[in-house]
Image (tube, rainbow, N blue to C red; front, side):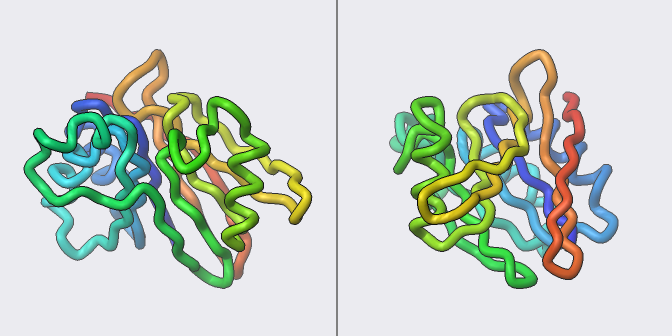
Length: 170
């Protein structure tokens, strides 16, 4: 299974489209972690059969009255090949900028093995120990902002999760 993960595109739907196009062969799922859900909707119009999971970020929370589509939830849980994922925007219900351990603990309380989160604009892949066990935390970075715009590309084979990062470009 091949999963592409984006966050924080901030007005760069073209960057998302190019990354999807580059990785479309064998792509099974697209996950967007907020702050540009309108970008994700636009980019994914060209791929109507590609399954997607989209969560709202703080940008959507503050601009909700201006958005032209229904709001997305602030978290999503899903499971693939026995691996449980939790997708969060990163600013709520736990602020990852305040504590990665608190975010990992929240994910563990939901039964997640992997927390996909955004908001920091910094790509990262680490395991965090909590009182309830370890949680793998993956941040795709910012797809549209920063010195190194990026996304995460996950490959899940027989319950083993591999993570790599790619660079987006306008």
